[in-house]
Amino acid sequence: MKIISIAKGGLFIIECIRIIALAFILIIRANESEFSTIVIFAAPAVLFPLMALFIWLDTNRYRAFTPLFTAGKCISVFMLLGWFIITGQVTMFESLILSGDLFALALILLINNDSVKHNENKAIADTHSGG
Image (tube, rainbow, N blue to C red):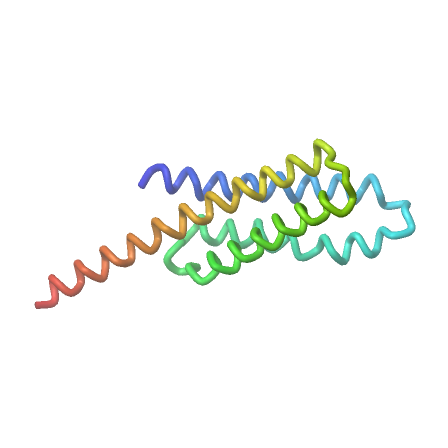
């Protein structure tokens, strides 16, 4: 159980670092002509740290966020891999983002698996205590 609480905190920290890095890149590229397009595509990424925060605070209450988080991370990984294939270039920063996404995906799957086991055990305990 202790490992899962560390994983939840780690997931939140990874997502915060990812958003800070994204904000840093946006600040550097603020004078470019395609800046508004970049901001439009980057804005939904802010939801990942929020979902990670809620999952960290109360996994059972916000259990519905885990499939959404997982789907978003899968889409992000496939988009980055597609970008690597199309452009033919892989920078160290993009590789770090991909590694962070893969690690976050592994953590959310671990958290989801633990949440499902916890709910199954709770349901079994409830049925046995009820009669």
